[in-house]
Length: 414
Ligand code: ATP
Ligand code: MG
Image 1: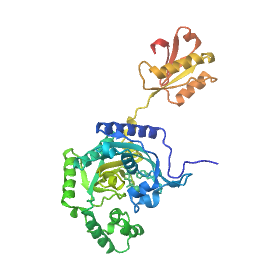
Image 2: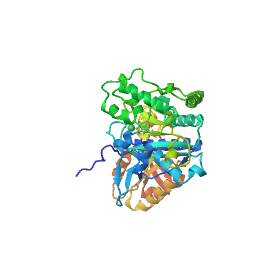
Image 3: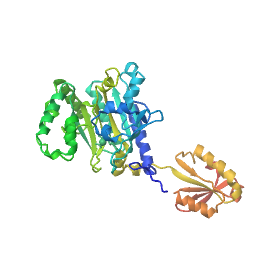
């Protein structure tokens, strides 16, 4: 039986594993500068947490969740996104009372039963952050700039920042009603649109099949109440003031129900159909809806695999430093313990003060030629050879694997 990774999942190794690590580190450094603290939540939660927060009539809840029962018949789901879990933790630990203006970030695997394609997987990584307790447009602007900074730290400069406002409970109902009237007047809508027209009419705006038919479609901007209008204008003024180029995109809606006011998405021209690197916005009612104090939140999530694809495209991977590889060889079999002790010392102290090295060997029962071949194969830049004659004088042979020159050097000088 030949096993393969389950459909829609992938193994991350080599340069991609290094890239993912660098992305997570850079994001963490930027989060900390902005005063965000890390939260790690479980990979599974009560399924109803997601149904309740994300919304029954969303793609995620309708068809993408991995739901299972545990041995006691509890209905659990692998997390499809990070916000619901974070809000659950925020309320459970009563941070809504002790830490109402908390700033938190997370990173980890998410699970969605989607049709796999480039940039779309069933298990994928997200990094996200949530800023609790601020109604101020500066919180929205800070989140947008934070994402741009994370992308820029990965060498991704050419992005399209799309922003929109979805209004609030006061002004959205009339827009929704007007939209339903508008869409009802349009012939031959696709199956998805027909279904969503009843449950989630805003989603029709970003339908890839029907969008060409929507001429003169009503715009939320024309329906925003004065407060929402002012908020949206201020968000734009703030991001403009730090030279962020953006597009107001009236068709931008989010797949999750909990958004209010600002929504945004950051797209890359370098990617194909799945061009959204990150998305987010404000959700002022979610904490209260899940049983906490009335606490506004603004946040985002980025798709790590897509960010890595864009980073690779911009040439960032070639700047990733890999440690210099050093191989420890033995010319005489009975020197294995001296060579082993030396390799551990090298790992602990570095080679001539250089700690960015990776040490391989020693191995026994192999000819010196075979050991040198192996050193070449792993890309070692140096091989340090333990041989009886030299060791008698306190020396080892240092072979440069690139130009193949070799010198006897006192061990103490390494
Ligand atoms: P899309 O429109 O691409 O399906 P979405 O609206 O479902 O995205 P969000 O739930 O807002 O996306 O997730 C934020 C980010 O996570 C996306 O912008 C994308 O980069 C990434 N992402 C979402 N779904 C997947 C997936 N199945 N595989 C890989 N990355 C994903
Ligand atoms: Mg999706």
